[in-house]
Length: 110
Figure 1 (cartoon, helix red, strand yellow):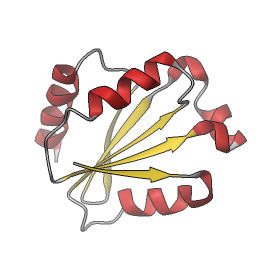
Figure 2: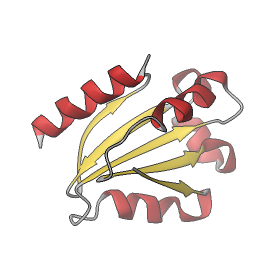
Figure 3: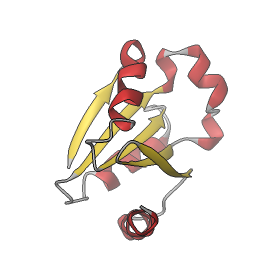
Figure 4: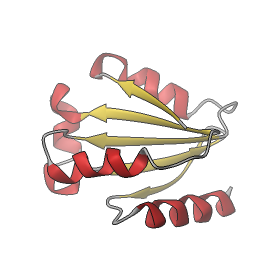
């Protein structure tokens, strides 16, 4: 798994990475690292072993527009992209098992 840290300055670049048809599987998630749920989420994500999966992480505190679109009670929120197309959105995962099942489901839609 490749985790790409995305600052607000290159948020558009993160979207470009997600929408690039050559990237087979990408998840883009928005977080506020000060929230316990977001801190736990990055630890859970680090357990994923899929080398083909790219993970882009965006800190909403850095860009006011993102804070309005993703209020703290909805974070972390995750989007799944495959070959440049958006396939789904999920707000929370309870465990690595939940994430893996969601990714399998998303792959089935592709």
